[in-house]
Length: 143
Image (cartoon, one colour):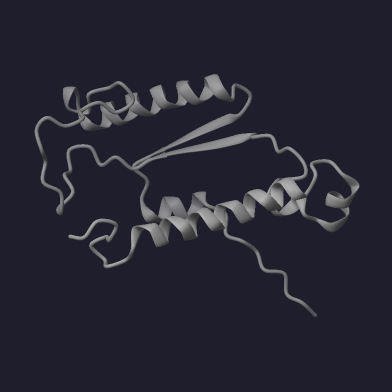
């Protein structure tokens, strides 16, 4: 393979240049906005890259789809491999107990970051459970 050419046949320097150009454009828009200046607020430049008001997290849904004990059909397990989930070895106990323990440990970690939020765990939910959990967007009909 030639130097600077990926397996897909694209020149890596061209990809790097394009990525760099796109990042510089966004970065330049942010700096040109003149943080807090009247010009930036009047023309809505700030709204393209930053939220105007801060939002507080009030509720958190921890959805764990681990399927402990079920190996994916298309993955070959290698050895050594990672065994711990949230500092718990899921194979050291019954799958249901391991899932619950992992969920509790994960919730405890999140509660350190956001202690006032309300947490609800959903352990290995079904498709129907997920449809109930995720609110569907409502469409307002226009007259």
